[in-house]
Image 1 (cartoon, one colour):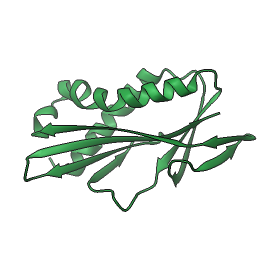
Image 2 (cartoon, rainbow, N blue to C red):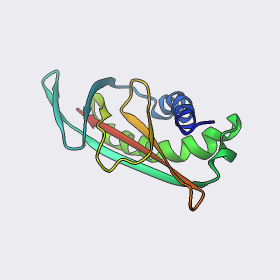
Image 3 (tube, rainbow, N blue to C red):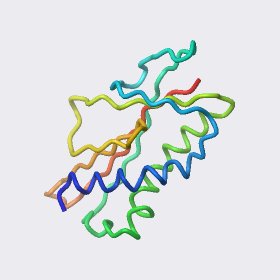
Image 4 (spheres, rainbow, N blue to C red):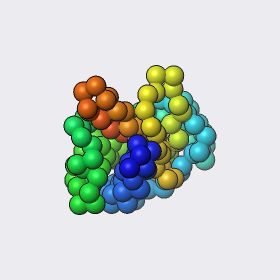
Length: 144
């Protein structure tokens, strides 16, 4: 399996799990225009300032975790839980969640996949010398 296929597989498995964990009871707006932390946008008269959150896990021999029964428990949950917790804490008492596609940066190294209609990207970095793969999860969101 190619590295791009692996990261796409993680993104496909992560979207339903994300929605299950978030249990959104507020309006969600997804902006396809790329942005970064501290960028601002006005939606329905409310100014939204975006925050970025990131989590990363290293894996020895990532191929061990590609089985359908291991992806959620060993890759998706550890990546999504810190993001979901941060978003949930910021959403308390708010009426709208705005997520945005993450703009590529010069220091990005690895293969990237984005979650459909949500401002989360997954980056896969492979270090062949140490036989280690790092999976980096990043979210760009704001609340109003």
